[in-house]
Each structure stands twice: as structure tokens, then as C-alpha cells.
Image 1 (tube, rainbow, N blue to C red):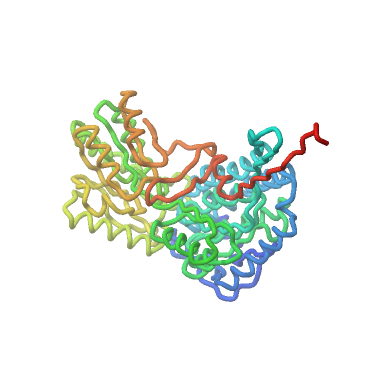
Image 2 (cartoon, helix red, strand yellow; image 1 turned 120 degrees about the horizontal axis):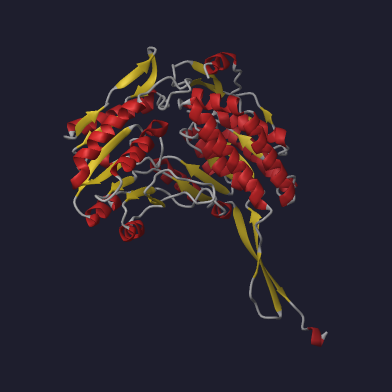
Length: 495
């Protein structure tokens, strides 16, 4: 709708932190800049250790009081379902905040990000009163109960590429289990998380149960990960920072640390595949969200017989993904999140050129109406596996196309990476599909598809793509303690 721009002009944005059930005055602030046009949207709290201390104290107090942790699962369910409903009824505002703050197309923000985030909150709300504890098969003179309990205070640090969705993947299972949460959104996209906290309170979440402190990673993020009164830290972001988070956990109180990190996902097209469908799927996925996705299929591996045809078709399809104003409903690729990310992507593009890859299309930074941080959809052919663009996560709309000769070659190329988040296999041969899926070292294997997803299945990676899993019932395990209660029973015959 053309009214998105009008709504943006009228939008009132509050960048203050949300602690203990209310917005709090900022000690220091930073400018929140829209990548769409470089405009300052508002000033946002620049959280530091003092703000984190306040938020953790509020979370601990709410947990100890039992206002949420001891609430019945059915009552927690009702609050989370109401929370999801408020997200949907405020969908346009949340979608607009997301697009202005992060640069993605507003139509995707509303239909995909907001819809998926609200569904996540509701799903965990629905799930929590259907999860049963266990009775162990002990001897008749004993009763052993195995129960899950909330951990206490959960810290969540989420990235800027899917702000609402990544926040929901963390806070929904943590809250459903009865924990109190301190959420640190990325300084590059904090606005939707702050608004979500207000909606959660409106839905009935008690004060102090969900706190949001925006700020920079080396200030608020490190303070949260190092805090001695945080029982668990869930992090999604770069592998470099993920390693630091795990170190912080060890340096402090040995808090549980779960990380979902980077990726360099291979997309394998075997010679018997539906070439058209496969190429369309890869191009659509690599350029979705401006390529700013940890599971983006940035390595397209094509059996040599079809290599030239796939490369040519991919370049043709890329024409449909030219960047445009995120506030236009027809836009399919928006802006990169900030000038720093734009510069990073352009450095990788220059690296590809210098190392001898063939630039097939794109490769240029552009502006829309003279402003913004946009990059053309970019495809490199003639890429060798050792090139930087084939090895490192670019986090932008850049695709490397690499030929292979045999299925064994494809698997070797695919697995030759420090990452292992996702992969895709395209073939009509059921044996080859199963064998490849088993051989690939990645957390999610797509067969004849990509980016197919549902809240019911876990998401996470192998190797340096992290540990633990988001989504599905398995995520509840991350935010709970497992307790055994062993009861010795008296023999009735002796009583």
C-alpha cells in the first residue's frame, strides 16, 4: 500500500529501554538510522552494565516472587496466546518498525516476519500445558520422578536480520517454561523488540518477566553474558561473537550458553534435477532478505553438465531482484542494514574480482532516490572453492557458482567448510537424495526445496554454526533444568 510512507511520517517511536514493566530514562543514547534513506528514526538507549544490572535484578525478583515461574501452565498459555494476538492486531506498526529499522521490504515484514513471530509465540503458549514429565521404571520400592523446571533468568542476544522472529525464537520457549528474560536486541535493529515488550505487558505478562535493553555488543551484550546472576544465555549472531559468548559464560558462572551462528550453505544441483525449479529456488533464497540470512544458499554447486545453463539462468532471474524502496509493496529486495554492512559486502565483491572469479551480474552499490544502502543482486561464476567468497560468510546478496563432476565431489565440496547450518540437494534419484542427506554435515537438509520451514522442526547447525536448537519442542530443553526426585517407598507388608 502507498500509505506505508504516510504511516512512516506519522509513526511515533520510543527508543527507551523496557525494564521492570516500564520504559526507563536513558543514561546515554545513540541514533537509530534507517538504511532506507539514512534518516535518524529516533534516539535509542545505549545500554551498559548498569542497565543490564537493573534488568537482571528485575528479572530475578520476578522469578523469585513466582508471579510467572509458579503460574500454572494453562495461565501462562493464556498470556502468550493473548500476546500473539496483540502482535497480529498491531501488525502494520511492527512491520513498519522492522522495515524502517532494518531495511527489508515491508510486505515481507508483515506477511512473513510478523506472521511467523506471532505464530511462534502462540505455538509455545499452546505447547506448554501439553508437555508431560516422566516417571522412571524403578524397582517397586521406589518412585523416581523426572521433572523440568524453569532455569531462572535467561539472557537472550539476537541479531539484526530478523529482529522480531529471532527474538520470538528465544523468548517464546523461555517464557513458556516459566523463566524471566532479559533481551538484548542488536543495536542495528532494536525497535520492534522494544515494542514487543510493551505488548507482552498488555497481554498480562507480569512486571519484570520480560525486559529489553538495547545497546552495543561490547557494552550491553558482554555485560549480559558475563552477569553472575544470569542462568542461561541464548545467542544468535556471528561465529566470531558466538565464541566470545561461550568464553564469557565460562569466565563468569558457567551459565548455559547456546549459540546459533553463521553459515555458508551449499545448494547442490545434480544432473538429473529439475534445473529450472532448482535455479529459481536458489536465486529466490539467496536474494531473499538481501542475502542477510545465516542459512542463505550462498554456494551453488552444479554438476558440470548443466553448469553453463544454470549460471546463465540464474543471471537472468537475478534481474527480478533489483533493490527498491522497502516501503513499496512490490519491492522484493530492500536495503542492507547499514553503511558498515554495505562496505563489508562490497569488499567481498572486490575480493571475488581480484581472485579471478567472473562477475556475471550485479556487483555495484546503488541508491534509491539518491539515498540508502543498497547492493545489486550479484552472481560470480568460475569460483574456486579456496576463494574468499566461497569460504567466508558474506551476509549479502552474493552468490558463488561452483562446478563439480561426481556426487562424491559435491559432498566433499559441500562439507569443506567450517560451517554446517543448512544444505540443499536437488535430484530425482531417491537413493542419491538419501545418501547425500546423510553425508552432509549440516543441521537442516532440504531435498528438492529450500527455506521450507515450520515451527515444529528444530533449527541450528553443526561445527562452527553453533550448538543447541531453536524452534520445536526441543527448544524447551535449553531453557529448563532437569530434576530427578527419588522417593523411597515403605513396604506395605511391613507397615
